[in-house]
Image (cartoon, rainbow, N blue to C red):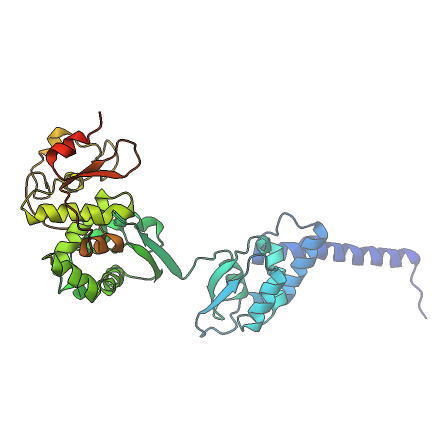
Length: 370
């Protein structure tokens, strides 16, 4: 049997150790970094070597979708759920072939620390790497769009950029000039007044026309036969009732006063008296760049003389169209107003937001603040 000199054996062992060291500390991490990006900063050297080797062993499994022709599926992650649980459920749901491959990639890249809880939309047509990235964004499939009582159309439009719906405020206002067919029997000049204040849950892919149709249908669904009868009892069409309710909405701070404020305006309409409502002038004036609002307050004497069909100090009857988007409470206040002898009201002097009501102009003057 041939014997090798001890020096030869030692040299051979050193070469083997150096080769292994090169693979471990050089080639393997470098190859993994080239293919999958740099490792997470929090990993130790031994962890970098370990997870680099794991990723290389997983090979094409990280970049090849399980089923390229599959559709999307919802996938929810609970708050505080462990990464290993998420990976295992993805395998069980048929999204990926091997939960360990996903887990190794997440830990190597550090993405395991930034997975977002919430609702995701994933697909087996995505690779493991793609799914790992999708888990960083829990953008919901639906959006919540809120319309507040008393907003005018421009204020509704101004809320769009933060709603998640993918169209501009300008396009929305332009489209809203043509009401959906569902409002045809009411014949409004635009959607102003018919953006019923509510919380709307909508698919993120909702188009402008779909949004307007949804809101219009919500409005008509709330205009019951009882409400229509209430409007008719005052000689009002639905459109006229919406116009009056839009004024009541802007005049009221406390909802419990709406029925009494509505009675004042109806009393005035019945005798041909001007409504004398500040909000109608505010609407006519439009955006005030000094106060940065659509509702300038207080109004000047010159403002009160502003010549517009919306100026209810100058022109008797209802303005030509709604001045805001009234709540269901305001619409009900018009339909079922409180019977009263009042023709005047003004804000109380205690800054409470409540009003003092009067029958005569002399009483109204006496209620003024000093």
